[in-house]
Image (cartoon, rainbow, N blue to C red; front, side, top):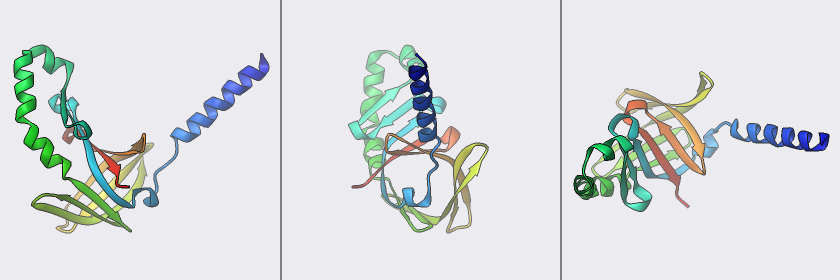
Amino acid sequence: MKNLIYLCLAFCMATTVGFAQKLTDKDLQGSWNLVGLDVLSSQGIYFDLANDDVKFSEEVEAQAPPEAIAQAKESMAPTIAALKQMKMIVNGNEIKQTMPGDEEKGVYSIVNEDDAQKLKIIFADGTGDTANLYMKDKKLYIDLGEDGIFIYSKEQ
């Protein structure tokens, strides 16, 4: 019985250490494609770009008839197509975000703040942005709060 308890304790500790792993600059290097945009908390919408789909919050679906949901999904097809072309390219400490017709360049740093990792970017025009940053299931999550969570997958 003691062995089982120790085994469970060891497993829990190993799992905790695995989840506590911090991202490094090396982890971010390369090209990243946007595969999801989660604006459920602010707008009730999740763009599943990997599956060309839009999902709505339970609250939105409860308030709208199925025909309206279907029509909304259809009308968002151009938005999905545009979002699928978004890329983030990280090379050294430089970061470039591209979307058809628009490109932003800057320098970034990863900082540890309030028990979370944050991505701080200073763009070429002098403006800046800070976002929570984490990795889950080999996907990079950049959480901009009310602006949504941008989910990226690394190009192979």
